[in-house]
Length: 313
Image 1 (cartoon, helix red, strand yellow):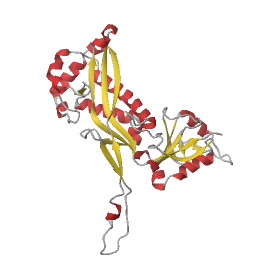
Image 2 (tube, one colour):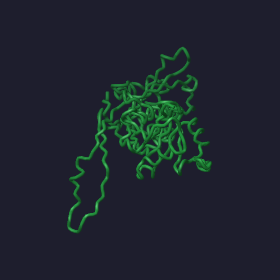
Image 3 (cartoon, one colour):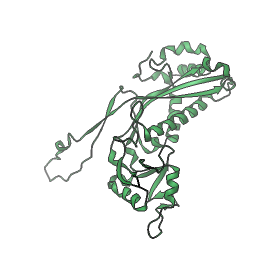
Image 4 (spheres, one colour):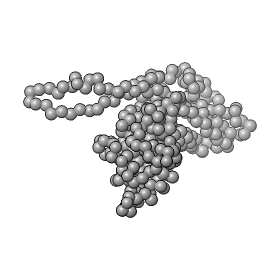
């Protein structure tokens, strides 16, 4: 058995790869050669390296925050680690003098990063599994990437931080509230934009759901100028992205966020592991695949992303 903190270099070998996929085709004879590589905490087997790489590439395409945020590979770290953030400093230094770096030695913010477990179940008909010409590897990688990406983005936006990542909408550890207003007006959206420092506006992106986007498309100022630019789907020159996990424009919610989402860190903590569940779905002539990934996510600089809170009329 390997411990959760091991780096499974054996997953690069052809022998492990062959036995892994034979096992995924419900060939129990393939279990013996790799039984000792079963994870002690999930009962799964780590994906072969080639499949893990393919899954990572698909997750990067399907997960909004793996594109907008900063992905950190920390698969060899312990259960808890800390992110440290600080403002970079540049100063003019007179000839012959030194930069007073000691002034900033304690300007660090430490944030704990945990390892949360996300599980997904994929089922396939036995006919496909038993068909040697069926691309089982490509199919499973695609299905798990889709399931993981949807669940990840939901947590990266609305996660509680308890047994899951801490989302951008978290009351105390998420995006800052720029202002509170009963509605989204032209002036309020501009105020949100200007509430961020230049360094965050430069790489800024708007985040909202489809309903909020529809409302903003018709938003105008007193002179009838639209805030939304149809030619490139942007607001005040900054791109708009959509997520079904963002709330509607209702009292108490924060339906629109703006900022530099690269300050949201996605921490990959352990390679994805999968196990085959044949007996459980035998009567339905199906084969089940249970997969787990370990990760965390946090906004490490809260002032980098802000939103408008919808207040009561």
